[in-house]
Image (cartoon, rainbow, N blue to C red):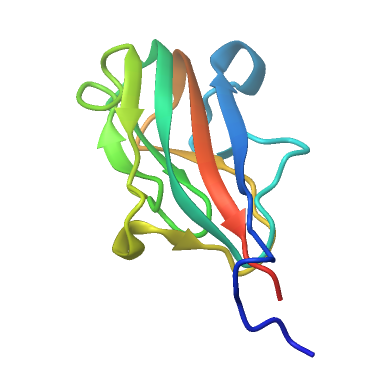
Length: 137
């Protein structure tokens, strides 16, 4: 019988961390996987999270960086590294902000990916930390 909700079957909030480190990942234009083994499962709902910039990304050109799970820019919209959120160190907001309208639902198991565009990166280190739930069937 399908689960119909209720208190006894609680859902845990889980966390996944992805890390971009130029010395490990390079900086080529395209998608870069930030999670290797850890994935967000199918039918999970990303509730919120943050980006922690440890070393601001740099580029020989006008690079942009976005972060996605399910679709383009659904975690961090594409932005030039010369401005927010990439140009300074510290914790930064992501699109999912613990509201219904901003959550992201996965259609299959997904990795956190950074999308580099316009020009390659030449340095940078940042973490992406996301909180999600997996609803019971």
